[in-house]
Image (cartoon, rainbow, N blue to C red; front, top):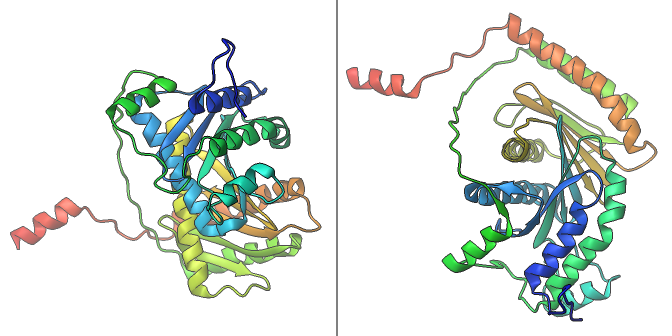
Length: 344
């Protein structure tokens, strides 16, 4: 199917995608939309005002979040919702399904089990209803996939490489601002929790499990992705699997924070990953995070969101009290340590 622009000329792939993204941008509450390959290369955007460096930083950051989400939940992932005080960021794959003729074309092109090669990042105002966004953008997302399928590209990673001319053309398709330089500082902290504190945290997690019928597992993770306290209900997860999941979950939250700061200069409060049969909630907890996995069942998503703040408040209180009473592990200065070794 050939698509023409307002001047009667055939539209290029970039123009078709740009047109669909512009329709998404026009939905009330949407600030911008970016289509990106899974490998982190940006394809097209609407409504974004970024510098050359930020264009690729944003695409690589959202790609890292997206791939971490896939690592956690494989083919079960439906979308990732990142929430902060000033915005929501939605990441969703353009998945394949035998129910759609376009998807059948993709599968015939030899990309079976390659369902997540493209994803879209949509930034909205913080008070926007997510369900409404999905309903109003569904057709535009289908149009984007249709354009990609009918373009005849191979759809196998690496999906696209850029020479200097293509790079300039790509950046021109984004709204590019002047370069600015930020100074970033890294601060490392280490802290040891007593057995009494760990017990208090685990007791809170157990109480939470009594109020959430379909809870499968939950944990409190400190900076760096190390589990402090955890609880599982009827789960066949081994301790090693729990630790691996916690490390990846912390990496996802940390990367999402970087992306949110780049895009909106905000720190994030929570992340929701919806999968085919369950949800994963991730929330900020001081220097660490709280994670909760819940099967879809009797309790609605809205009710779960109402229950969590109370328990997060209790967990934060225990951690803050522990830090004020217990001695932190002495942090070290690497330069000072090397200097002392040289003197000796």
